[in-house]
Image (cartoon, rainbow, N blue to C red; front, side, top):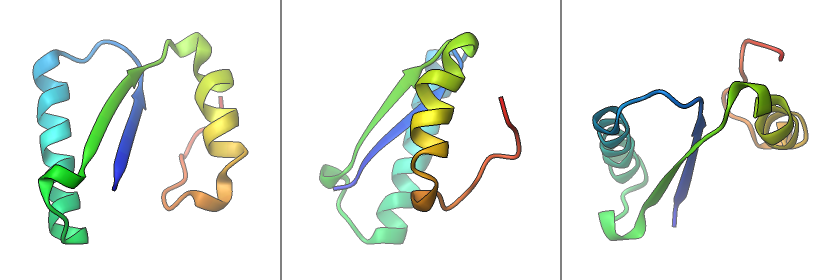
Length: 75
């Protein structure tokens, strides 16, 4: 606890992904007061043409009550 999943378009470098994961893990540890061993984080790349079906509808529209930051776009 917690497990974090980041879904984003492809195209970021491995270094960018590692830095993003590291920064997020640091914030989670500090905010939730959990040990690094408790945190897992995955990055899933989703093609732009698949975003609405694979992310926007199931994770944003259908789970809107769980969002703490809503997107400023509509696909």
